Image (tube, rainbow, N blue to C red; front, side, top):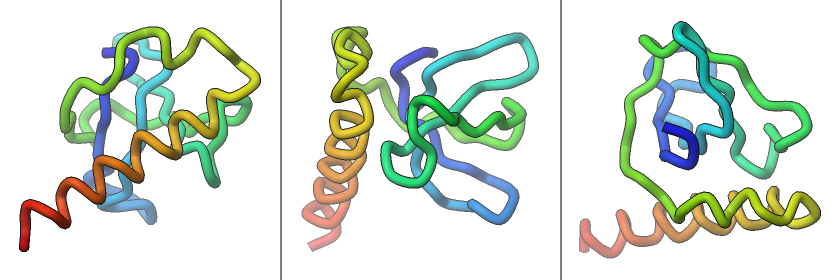
Length: 87
């Protein structure tokens, strides 16, 4: 599920959109490129997230220098597409 978008279902960050950068059996590590950057991901239980959709392929993580900007842009474009669909 690395590279997939997920929405937080519980906690103080409820309804916030993240991208999964790492996973284990029980947990996933999430980043948003803004508050939670790639060097300090948020650990969250799998049962507390809702998978939204697959984002860009693994190339998103190829260049560590601009990973946060790429993630932030991907989430921003997804939110804009949601707003366009509502209109």
